[in-house]
Length: 219
Image (cartoon, rainbow, N blue to C red; front, side, top):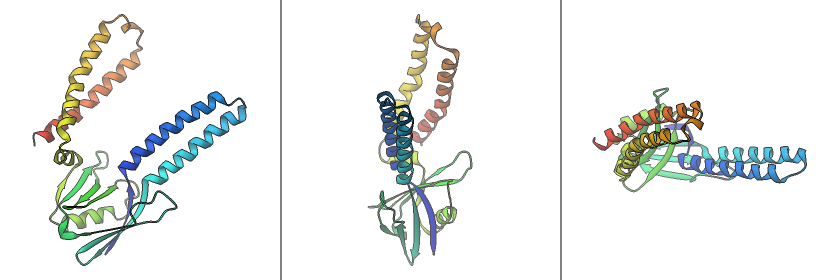
């Protein structure tokens, strides 16, 4: 039995964002310092395209999963560079946790990682090119005794959830106070209405996240 999967690594997505920001800043430097009009347009454009292409290329990989008797073998596709671990193997019975999130828009499962006592297989199976993703998740649920948790549960097991909850609580009560102080200041009338609406909208969108953290912490 085998499954073809398309993987997007979250850790590499973060790294790609850092590279993207760096490329953007470097492009601004080129625009400011290059006098030739043609080069001022072409150089930043080529730089942005190159960094974006490399960032996308670094974050994804095709993965072939083979189930042989009681073992699961992971074969990562070879690339010119930015390769993932070439081969990994785990025992089906050793799997303890499956970190699975739900996509709120499509209600599909996103398999983040597979945990054993001494191994963690980072994945990132989402809604892009799902291939055999659903079949593989069903296989894991039906053929292992693993506990299914989500990313917040994982944070809780790692001892990070309480810190995230404290920070979010400070923001929850601190942001309204900051807005009130800003509203009472002399600069209040200088702030455009759409900026106030954006801040208020962002704050209201933050509340469900805080409630979810609180629910998971008290679970």
